[in-house]
Image (cartoon, rainbow, N blue to C red; front, side, top):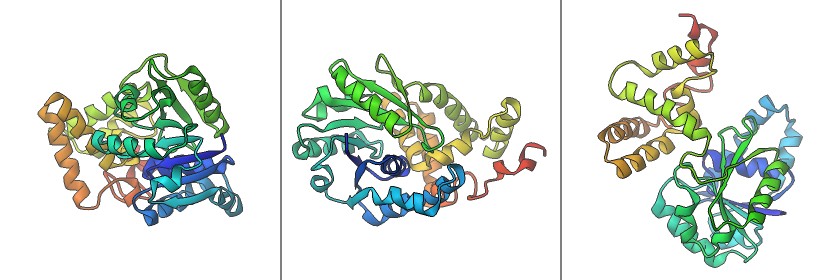
Length: 294
């Protein structure tokens, strides 16, 4: 693989694009808003300098491998060996995208989705290449939490799994190959119950987010609690997952949680990226040593 297309430059899409470019691949980025994609990718500079000690010149070398950022799917995918989709968690949106990109991608292109919500057998039917379709699920802050969960369907060619595994290692990820499809993969199967419990406590008025996080962090030694994690994920993504869960289960608690997060989003509180979520950034309260003492 040499040429990689990233579809969607949100929180994770921008990270996947830059990490791939930093590892020496030619990257094209498709995003509806070009300026937003450029801003998100360049904003990673402080994180890479802080956590990986990259110099300004080293960070720029990664940027130089992002050959194009475009709002035209055909331009982005025309030479792609691998396309990684990181669009919002809407099945209708993904269906429309996969039907369109299938018409435009070269026959060689492998399709991968970073979806947290949908398993590959839900998405592969929207494409013209189920044998070349799989999910590649990245953890947030991939330069630091460098795991990618790889999950195919019964139709996915084993060679495609191998190629995705090799590619993951080349961009300095640790590949975790799942033997079967699993909603939530491994990470979210473990993490979602924690986040859901925290959100339920908040929605019911049991305690404020800071108190919930404080209890969890002191009791377990974890570096952040569920609401710190939700800020990293982004409230738009978290709210969409709650809406999807409500649509599937008709459990009113998920609708109530989504509605509460929508109120925050309307006020511009979208999480770490916007500078305000459940906490204020770049110096959230849970990072203050006093947070765990008083």
